[in-house]
Image 1 (cartoon, one colour):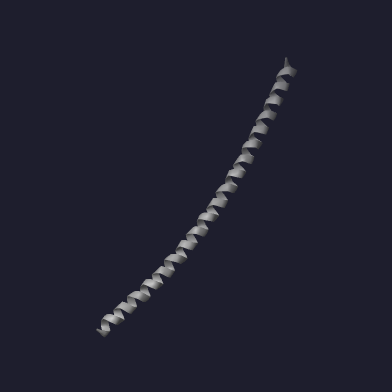
Image 2 (cartoon, one colour):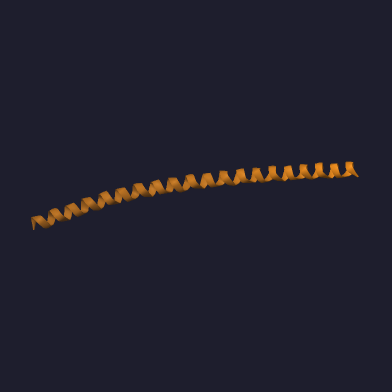
Amino acid sequence: MFTDDVDENDMTNSRATWKGEIDEWLERLKTAEKDLGLKEKELRRREMILRQREKNLEEQFHVVVSSLYLFCT
């Protein structure tokens, strides 16, 4: 009977330890998920800025090409 009590206590202690470890990992995962979300948002913002710059450069190029065409004709 005493051995069964010891085994049960070991199992209970192990279960509590595992639960603590699982909770720690869940918190780490939540933090990582939040960080990834913030990085994704920043990446989208930067992509939008780059697209706008690209559009502006294309417009400038068309103006230069149009001006050259008019000048040469």
